[in-house]
Image (tube, rainbow, N blue to C red; front, side):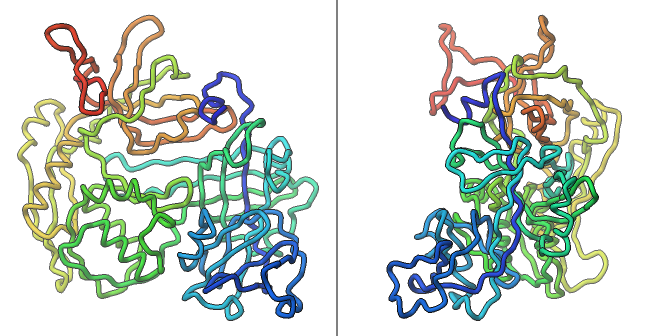
Length: 498
């Protein structure tokens, strides 16, 4: 039975796992090929000449590895040994061997290397099927995780994260803040079921420890996604460059992160890249990398995200995008309330473009687009002009940007909070879903296309709460004059109303 099949059951035995990496200094490494080094937890290296292993055949107290830190650089986890061997600054853990590649393909003996040994926690206290370790029964509450975005400003970063309470009544964790460098270490949240293999558990979040709070009763850990750590001061210049390519160059030039599937969710990234705007940048006075990236996001109406596995992704949403999920009325566990907020309507825009990088103060040429103001005011009796200073190079790009904003935010779209089963765990902020919202025995809104703008996991009861915005009228299947359903090129039934 798959994860999705188990999650679809009204009664299930869901298990929540919280991984906290505790760094452990390791200075024993054996070469395993060009630039690849390994440590075996049992000190066994059958392929190596015994005369070269003096002092290296040491048993290591490592049950599970979640991360590796070389000096201050967090290595990226590879899925295979081959992937590790082909990517600098990566590691691969197979359950007994830890393989690494150091910055510059260096020898590990000229670096300080800390292994993130996993401390695992759960509410039940159990060892998942085929797992290497016990997940101690210390979770006082399951981790809270939320993801959201600003309803008006696509591109304005909302850092994802949460917190967790761990039982410390026995004092076992009293010295965790003193004895270990926990800050900045990886933290992960996964879910699965008691009768499920550990390899089939689903990762919900990968981030880093931000703060600790310790008392006699509990340890509270807050964690954030790794976008927040992109604070290095950098300079960057490009002319008429694809916005996502600019981000790739910033991360590669300053953090040594190449564009590939090890570091990026390439499916999301490539889909967004085809929609991304062209930007021109000339930053000669160093700024935090994440601030430059946010300016790029705001210039292409997109969202720079971290996926559950900790990989970089990007989403560019358009109001005409199709739904990728269907949520029937029977799957909504609460009684939704429709909220209408006129402050979310934009009646006109002021788009700054063609920035003069040599000028202090106001360095933009502005497009003031009031073409839809009268029509929107007639509907909602409100004026709401929004200013966007962008990295767009010319008037044509600015006008297209304005058209997209007014198309997206020119209507009041009612907002709902719906609680649904954990089987919808993989819906992301920015996805569209066809959602049916009715009274118990009477049609209310019917089936409508809705955009997800916030997502909160309620892991204590195996659900999640989605904040959605409704688009258009009720959806209907399109039929021919003979009563046959119309289908698109993929064989899906054509819908009208969104």
